[in-house]
Image (cartoon, rainbow, N blue to C red; front, side, top):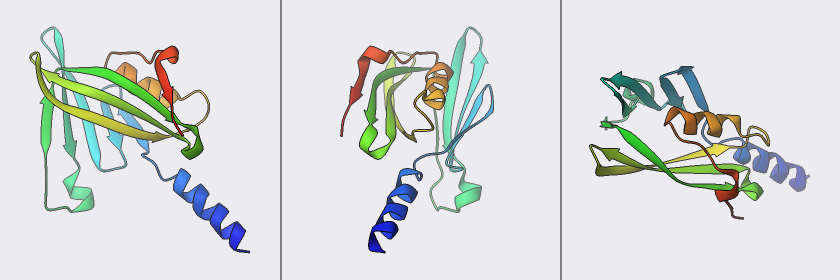
Length: 133
């Protein structure tokens, strides 16, 4: 019986990674806690990340903006059914932060991670994906 409980716990753990919802072409919500929005400002995109403080009632609220995100790496961890996208964030050619998004595998096609990369106007190159256990 303990084996089944462990299997169930493992499956719950594997399914617990970030849930990403595309509200529209310009808005992403991650885990119902964070919002990433983009707007076109003159000839460039401006992105903003903020927490949805109303939902989870934390005492800290934040918002930051940037105009470019470089996809630095994509790491797959098949044992944990996780893909991690790591971005470097820029504002007017100045480094302003890093963003790491951990996603559960929805299937072998990784459509959500592809859509996130496209949202930031970049692409995932299959030959550059790192596999870790």
